Length: 300
Image (tube, rainbow, N blue to C red):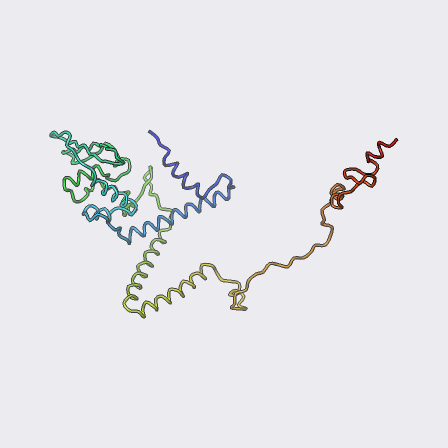
């Protein structure tokens, strides 16, 4: 089976930046801008995963374990499945020397849905008929309901895929020929962000010890923010010339009437309309003149 889901996701992402009316040069600029925004969002997400810990709704050891392993997005999906697993009911269907089969019932929107969970004793592996783990890569509510029934407190390592972990980028990525694929994003940006975040966190902690420290830090940050804004915008015209420290605003130039015949050429009909409506001198009606007056035409 082949699917175009990945291509459709890419199309939906780039349609936010690209239109069919764009020229080739405009397309390249917008394409690079879209990739830059995507890489920036990824760097922010990596920073959040590295220095922030997700808050757990359920105080369960497995939930706390996955909060430290999974990225923020995948942990939120896993936690929702863990919450929904508490509403599932297991019923033993068959059991033999090699496997145990359970029917997992859940009630959703006034409908009862049944899934089949198979636990193989030799390999110590559980699988579900919904195939959500094979499709998405995280354990869903049906197998989690079995873990809760068997009082399994921590998730086994074989159910935790590396691609959803915070350390997914720690290893090397190779292509089909075995060559290492390097990340196109600037790795120094994340390092700088992490270093400055730690420094800022330490400064804030020291400033909170006294009221004078908070005021000093607040004033310093305001002044620093102004300087960074000036550095980002670049030097102004006054700073380059050095003539004045006050801000001068550029006004619109004065309108000057051009010399020469730039008037639009008008036709005879338009000139007649501007002069006004003419009346017949013979009968006083409009629409004709004295030569075309019906009164003169009817006179023998």
